[in-house]
Length: 90
Image 1 (cartoon, rainbow, N blue to C red):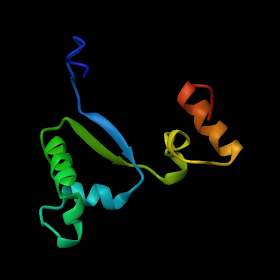
Image 2 (image 1 turned 120 degrees about the vertical axis):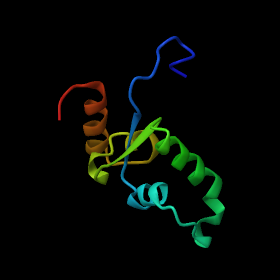
Image 3 (image 1 turned 180 degrees about the vertical axis):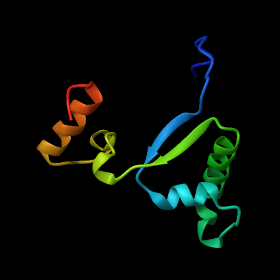
Image 4 (image 1 turned 180 degrees about the horizontal axis):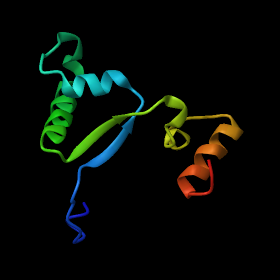
């Protein structure tokens, strides 16, 4: 998308991931039959990682700042993540 807007991507897009299984699957060269239902998405992610379009970085769940956008959280936790994303504190 950024290239379409005229901004060439210089480095891989970093995706902070709190799901270690996702990171392992993106690096695992062996096909597991238990992942058959997500195989296309997994292969696409592996390709993006291999081409260095994206880079998965492990992060602890409590520091997954996008969580307040996707799930219900206690008000204080939501406010913490909201402030971090806005650049207003830790």
